[in-house]
Length: 161
Image 1 (cartoon, rainbow, N blue to C red):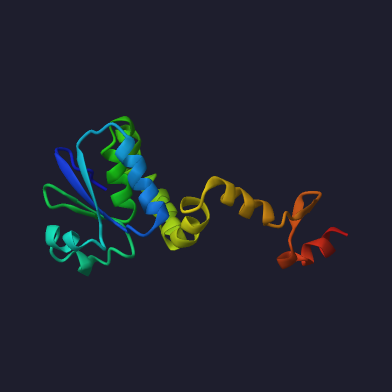
Image 2 (tube, rainbow, N blue to C red; image 1 turned 90 degrees about the vertical axis):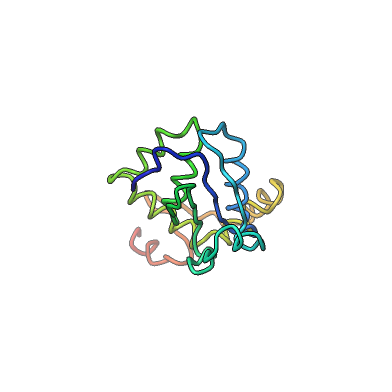
């Protein structure tokens, strides 16, 4: 991935209904800037006006970033580009954009994107007390020896006998 060397501004098109996306937007907004970032929910009427053809890129599926030089980044590359906009995280973004770590970033982004609505319901749209209550109602598996047995893998209990 080639990060924009000289850019003054990027536009980030994200899911304005996704708690994880909104939390990322809020976090990026609090960081000191290397260049300007405009966040626009892809559902907003202005999104298609600002970026004609945006909907053909399927912004509901993955975040999209467009630079002032008309370069478009999607998915993990868009996340890395946003990180690159943060003055304190530029070197980390450069490392993530390299050939060794970009596949890890892509895998992580796909995993999070595929589960973002569920993760948002649990972590990003609920108050801390409610998250704590949900986590405490989850069943803790019984651990015996080197294995933690759940109902789904009851067969391990038999192997450990």
